[in-house]
Amino acid sequence: MTATDAPPVVPATGPGSADLRVAVLGVGLMGADHVTRLHRRVSGARVAVVSDAATDRADQVAAEVPGCRVVPDPLAAVADPEIDAVVIASPGRFHEEQVLACIERGIPVLCEKPLTMDAASSLAVVRAEDAYAARTGRRLVQVGFMRRFDPEYATLRELIASGGIGEPLVVHCAHRNPAVPPGVTTESVVNDSVVHEVDVARFLLGEEIAAVTVLRPRSTRHAAEELSDPLLVLLETTGSRVVDVEVFVTTGLAYEVRTEVVGEDGSAMIGIPQGLVRQHSGPGGAVRGTTVTAGFRERFALAYDLELQRWVDAARRGTVDGPGVWDGYAAQAVCAAGVEALRTGRRTEVRMEQR
Ligand code: ISE
Image 1: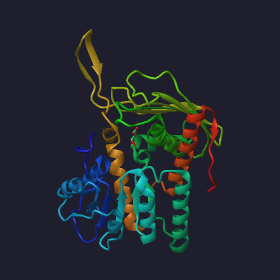
Image 2: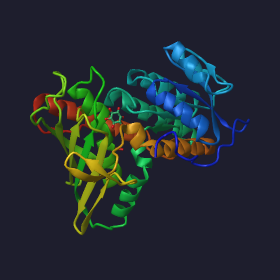
Image 3: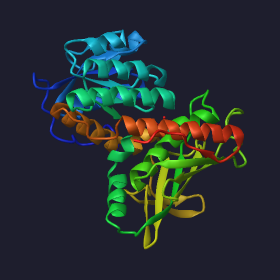
Image 4: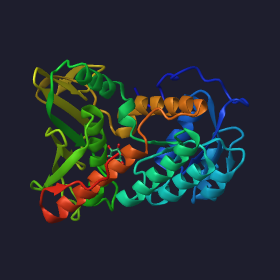
């Protein structure tokens, strides 16, 4: 299912005074996708403001949504009295001040990963939200780890939690992208791609990651010079389980994300392309096959829809119903250890506070 043909998660109600008035900060690929999603497939919210440094892009995206205004300054958008909630899809370096501004104003925010650019500043956001929650009893921040809303991941988690495969022991993850934009480095692959597997490991196993090791196998000739691709990342959890992640971002093929959990009494796997199976003639005779999603926006289209709908529903109830600031902080702390492991070639312990 793609983002364009996915059915509404719940029937759209159309603009109305009870709708959550949302500002979307950053309307690059992901932000523009969220604008369309909120406008067409999510109920209970309307995009009232978009904000982007590229004002022509903001104008273009706003034109899709009747009544949507462009507010070029993102902090002015957060402060706008006619805004009830914010989606942050701006470049990661702006997240910290934008999330803190939302907490300061006491409005719900869905922040795409990363929560901030490093563990220390993510911890500062945790502290700021904790202080707000201590005063009001309410949480405000959800972090955009959309895989938690993917029905396959949710089912896998339920299976593990129900004891269906016994104690989970080992998790195998494959994360393959067909290509990455110019400028992507080995370290940014840890922060942008491996970070999802870190969150998946924490989500499935319910434990923190204690140590990270990164191996660099022979690199593909298709990768740019500054990119060591693929990588093999080993995550050890506080409960002595091990997660191995193969991350390979220049396969030239399609977007593949697979996760297999091996337990004491069985194993379970997700991410095997399903749907239409086609038989047709190929070079060596008839072949049988199915299509692999082209990119993450296609593979996780439904997960993004569900993520946004649940965020809107929770925001209207004054709660958060998804990964929060602690998950954002933990992911940053593990990625920092991952980057250090990459630089030193050594097993690196994760340094993080106790919740
Ligand atoms: C991208 O930034 C994402 O967040 C995708 O979910 C991930 O799969 C991809 O590897 C990243 O580059």
